[in-house]
Length: 114
Image (cartoon, one colour):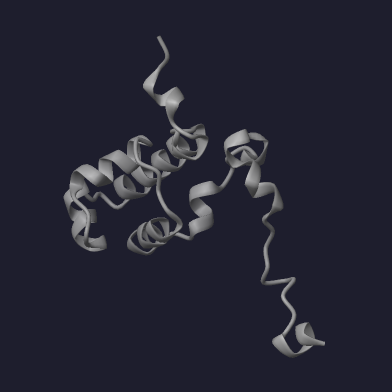
């Protein structure tokens, strides 16, 4: 009998990075001595249960939601990923290999059109 999680596409499965980011969310919240309800009030549009699901890695945190957490906790988005092993080796995140910082590579629109 196969596990229900095995039936999900890879991008919907809970991965190690989801759990690690969730732990960082919890650490940031606890360092500020906030309850899940207080964070939900700060962020807006979430319940304390949703906060705990993110922290447990049961729910994936979108980029936009992570930005909202970072702002509420006074942290940079990078803090949530600091010292986490390279996730590009995980097949779930193989698409990340092609991503690179674009701020240093973008040309002004006039130069790009030439």
